[in-house]
Length: 134
Image 1 (cartoon, rainbow, N blue to C red):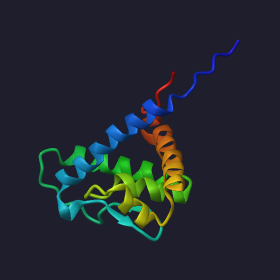
Image 2: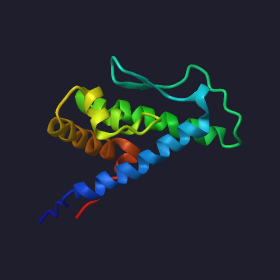
Image 3: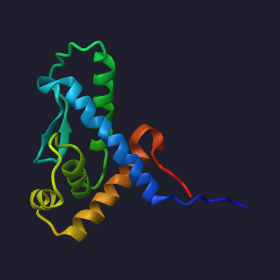
Image 4: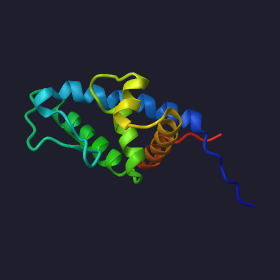
């Protein structure tokens, strides 16, 4: 008999939401000249060419941002990745209407693809540690 655990989408999405607050925190700690940028053509995150960190936590900041960038860029569906980046990765939090305007889509599409991306990110990031099961 095999026990298949069911993914708790709500808890998983809450875990991703909480984790993404760390991405923005690390961005602020890195300072403007070291921030990850957004390639709005490919909808991928881009690490700085050179790190110029002066914080005593330099290594942790750099490694954390590198992990976030790697894992976010691995979200397979480009549209889902785009909506994830729009929602979670801009330094200034956007309203839902601003997100929809940037995405160029309707609310139902936006939320559906963002959910796909969030669940995909939860599976990828830190070997799935953000996934929660019922």
